[in-house]
Image 1 (cartoon, rainbow, N blue to C red):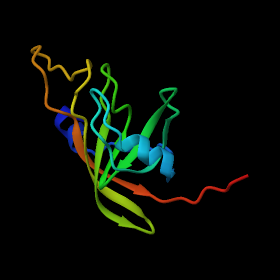
Image 2 (image 1 turned 30 degrees about the horizontal axis):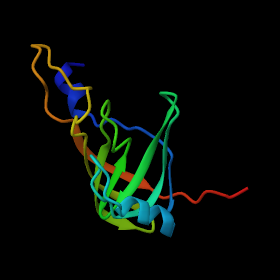
Image 3 (image 1 turned 120 degrees about the vertical axis):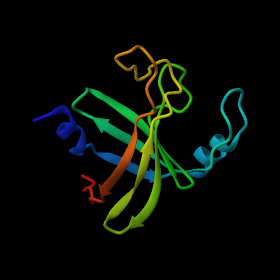
Length: 130
């Protein structure tokens, strides 16, 4: 298989995303102005479990944007998922990582590559509360 054929195949990553409604105290704290962190319209919060890599990311729904990863970190940047379709079955849209931290995509020639981006879909699953 040529490298061109490999690029055309979409990659699939299965990771649990758990979200809950933000309570009033969390919403008020998110709206507060702090140095270096703009106010946020926090609606839901949660985590994405990156089991394959051994870490857990923060997740925040801010309007129609779902931020996955640390929004206020200087050494990393979150994936930003723009939700275009939301239904009882799940949600879908596009994502981008703005490379706002110290990690960058570097091409073979040493130049900085474009921001990683693509399309996504997520299936809604009901989790049992035991």
